[in-house]
Structures are given as structure tokens and as C-alpha cells.
Image (cartoon, rainbow over all chains, first blue to last red; front, side):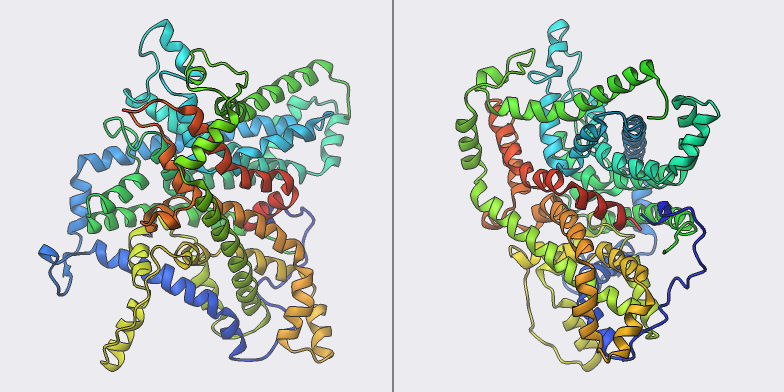
Length: 313
Length: 295
């Protein structure tokens, strides 16, 4: 990863240009053509449709003709809907909960593994596994593990009925989806944190050990500050992924389906179900745009922050 | 490693073991459940010992979710996405890095922008275009020349439909761009001096050098494609093009039927195995791919 690459000062390299290049006007276009066609058909055209839909309405009764331009009306309608705001706050709760839980666990594990005690390679080998498992599979597995009448947690219901029932209580359902997402992303966060920790020069750790600092002290005063860019990057990435990522959709669809009583109806899930079940394209498109604005904000912050640290060796 | 800290080491091992339980616990539960009978799997508290019904459950799950064709579809899709992505990314990054055309920056930013909008938020219009790929072409020709064409190409329920939208993102392009940037300028200079044309340089020098990159990208793309859910779910209305991930939906015990979690878990086990094998066996490449695609 570039921003972990090296701490030695890179030569002032021209980042965008090679010294030696080939001359041809049509070859680069030919080489780029497959990608250009793909992103035109499957990215830019659909993306433009989202824009047009968000600001217009389908002609009534499925009739033919021009779409009716309605300005900001679709947005007004979306924002006036209390269900929508509920979905936004649920998404925020989900995103921050899952991110915090996942990053915390991954961080503790990464710090432990980075002490390089005997056998820690084996632990590292397994800690990466959750990332290989698809979100729907995680959802299905945890639906069983956390089921109210069988699995791991069901035992609490024998002490007192309904101590744990994600099919009945919204808060329990939310905990369930947060746990699924956090568990899956432990693997990913762990990979990046160990990569970040490994790029801290060993000599720095040793020097500070010579000065008499213990491992805990070093973790707080040395490793955490030096890991800050990685942590920040992961924070942004986890938040965006849990907000709009495919994993969120897969997990919710296989565990709670947005229920009970819409208590896990997060934004991604709502958009898709509104469009395909409710057939409300314009409303869904307007909601997508709001979501996109949020992601762009996240990505912008991330790119500005990360790009400053990019060196190419 | 540098000092003796017996207590802290014990604490570290303790935490690492807890972590191992947290990670491998669910895997073990899936496995144990998939070997038990219906009665065993529904006992409370959960019995962690494997039962004797493993083969029976696998068979039941295989039939119920029709896993044979589903796994085949997943496999074909994943391999196509993997190769498609590598080819497209290697070529377009070559165009960006090794030619100084004025359109280069425009192209770079066009590709970069695709990172902003995940498939989930543009899934409906993507679905529409997959149903009628040539709609933009028809529109363009009609506005330019006034001729109405009847060109049609429907991608729903086809491998192209499963694969193409997944290739249309920027991930691999940036990985390759970054890799080309790290190559010394002298390579291209020497090649040009020897009279190599761009195509020759690409085939004989860049491709062999990027073998590592290719493997890294291949592993993450395979896992990515195999684990796709929303897109295949929406666009395969016919059962014969269903992927394994979509077929998994049929394994969820419904409210009014028997809670056959043993069969669900057996199915889940089969479906999640291929990417798990890739990650476990090719872990070095997978980690490298993951770390280097994120800019």
C-alpha cells in the first residue's frame, strides 16, 4: 500500500509521467477502448439515469412520452418521509457500531500478533479467514448461531423466555447485523493493520525498548501514532462500506430482511427494495443521490488525506 | 523478542486464543451443525460435537438448492470476471502510463470516478441497461442522424450479464497503473532503442514482469466475483443462471417449515468453501492484492 510504503524521502519523481513513452495517437485509445466501453455502458449511462430519474417522474399509467421534469420535488418527498429519516439514523447506528466493533477487535489482535511471539504466524493465518466468506453466508451462519430457538445463544431463553429474540425485538436484530458485519470485516481490518504495523521500522521499536519502555507503553506511544494513517484510512473505508457496501445488503437480506418492523431497514436495503418492490424509481434515485453525496464526501476526505502520503519508489 | 515479559506474553497469548475462538468458532459451528441430525442441531444448548449425518446433509442441501448448476455458474462467472478484469486493467493502465496523449488525464479521471458510485446505488439503471444494452447506441444514432435502429441485446439471464457490469470498475486499473509507475524508465527506453513497438513491449516485457501482480489481482477478483450477491440475484430470473450465492437464499428455513439448520449449514459450507480455499492456500497473494489495490 502506497502510504505505508517507505519512510525514506522519495526522490522528487514526476508522479503522472514517464520519461520514456511511445508515440501514437490511436494506440492508447485502442488499448483503453475495452475499459472505456465497459464504463460507458455499465457505469456512466446508468449513473446518468440515476440523475435524470431523481429530477423527473415517469409518465403516468406507464404511458409513453417525455419524463416529467419536477426539479427537487422527489427530494422534498423523500425528506418529508419520517421512515426515511429513521432509515438514515439506523444506517448511521449500523455503520458506526459495526466499524467501531470491527476495528477495535482487529486492532487488539494486530497488536498482539505484531509482538511476534512464537506461533503468532499461525494466529495470523486464521484471523484473515472471515474476509473470504461472503456476506450472505455470514448472514446465514449467524442467523443460525444467534437464532432464538437453536444455536449458540438460544440457551439464554431457557433461563427466561425472550431474553434474546432478533425476530421479535428491533434492538436485537440490529445487534445481530452489526455483529455479522463486524465479524466479516475483522479479517480485512486485520490485514491492513498488520501491514501498517510491519512497516514501522524495527529499529524504532528496539531503540525505545533500550530506553526502557515496555510493550504496552510502546503500543500507545509509538505504534498507534505511527499507525494513524492506516487507522484513518480504515475508518473511512469501513464507514463507507457499511453505509453503502454490498456486504450490508447481503447481511440484512439473509438475516432480518429489514425487520422486525423495519428496525434494520438501512439505506442500501431500503433503496433496493423501494425500487424493485415498490417500483418507485424516482424516489429510489433521489435517495441514491443523497447516499452518493455522502460517499463523495467520505472519498474526498480520504483521497486528500491519503494522496499526500503517496510515494512511488 | 527483545525483552523478557512472561506475564505480558501470557496475556498476549490469552487474547490471541480468544481471537481464535471468535474467528474459528463460527466456522466450527457451521461444520458441527452440518454433520448433525435435525433433532441434534436443534438441541439447546448447542452440542459442539459433530454428528454422523454429514453426507446426508450435504446431499440434501445439494438437491434443495440445486447446487450442481449453481456452483458451475459461480465458477464460470468468477473465472470470466477474473480474466476479464486482468486483461482490461493491464491494457488500460498501459494506455494511461506509456502514452502521452492529451486525453490521458480525462480518461484517468473517468476511471477514477467509477470508484464513487458502488453498484448498489445504481443497480436499477444498470439492470435496465443490461436488459437493453444498445439503448444508448440507438439514442445516440437517432439524435445524430434521425435513423431509428432496431438493434437489441438483452443481457439478463446470461453469463455476459453476470460478468460485464462487475468488470466495469476501476480496481485493477489502479493496481496496474501503480505497478507500471514503479518500473524503471530505462526499461521502456531500452526497448524503444531496440526498436520494440508498444505491443511488443507490452507482451514481452510488461506482462512477464507483472506476473506477481496478476496473481494477486486474480485471487481478489475471484473471491470478489464468487461472493457477489445483489447483482446476480436481481438479474437472474431464470433458475438455470442462478449462482451459488443466490441459491443460498433457498436454504434459509422458513417460518412455517422444519428448522433444518443442519441442511442450511451444509449448503453454506459448500458454497463458502471455494473462496476460503483461495484465501487460505494463496494467502500471500491474496493479502498482497488486497493491500495494493487500495491505492
